Image (cartoon, rainbow, N blue to C red; front, side, top):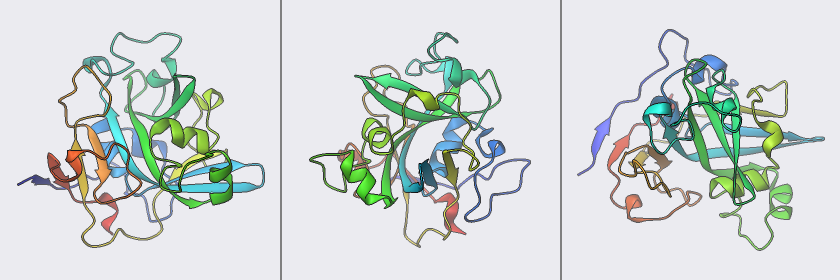
Length: 229
């Protein structure tokens, strides 16, 4: 049977209220704490006169220079500089001519972050569908590259603060997660180094999660959702 771990609240700061935009202090912690607590939070993207919204359902933590799977493993360079920036900013990197979005975590210079792997569409279906030809609603934001394509996120967002005064931000959900919701833990997807580390987090049972593997049936651990109320 999978083990259970209690949630960990942000130290030395007041827990964000429901619906509040997540401040840099929320991200100023270890990525393996931030990653599961982002599940259920809402990713917003302002495009012209429209505001897109999606509920984050899957994340992965990257531990910086100590993590062989992290872009920060060999230290800072021109490509990964944003990852060593202040917490609460975006690190956007290319993969196969597409883009992936991360939130930078911990103090400046740490090189740690959380990859946003999948989300559930909440607002902006017509926009998402137009940018995701041939895909069903369940697949628009399933996987980090599809998420960025559907939400029109590219390298221009690199270094950008997650701030509701701009065009990209993350907010706490407006309602508590439902009783019975669980966060499952598994190894990360598609990494060849440190592949055994349990640093992927997802909402168990969500149809919008990527990589539907045996981890859905037998996760390594189960966590209580942070946004329980």
